[in-house]
Image (tube, rainbow, N blue to C red; front, side):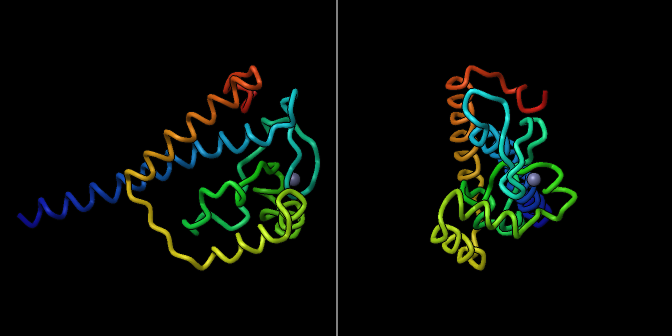
Length: 153
Ligand SMILES: [Zn+2]
């Protein structure tokens, strides 16, 4: 009995982690598509302001991914160049400046206030968010007349 209980618990936990990773990948694609400059496959990096090909974009988190409350926030996540995201530790002062320009100071303060809040996603919520963002990806691609490969090419 106890071994069944344990394996069930483990199964549930890994299911959640697997879904979080799946949603990370889907959400990242949506954010990069959303932030493409219309009629182009370019984006402006939220932190350094440089315009670069979308293939050089990451989905950069302002409040880092360990905070579940803001991990899938559309304000917290923006197209960021790989240089800023991976080699400049997120260029956080530039990121904050870029966020204020994009969303306004009040939204940024609100976002920052969420950092200390606890959020746990149930598997059904993660699945629903995967479906939601898959739909939004399809809409963005249709609107722009592009294929998903534009993110990597
Ligand atoms: Zn940058």
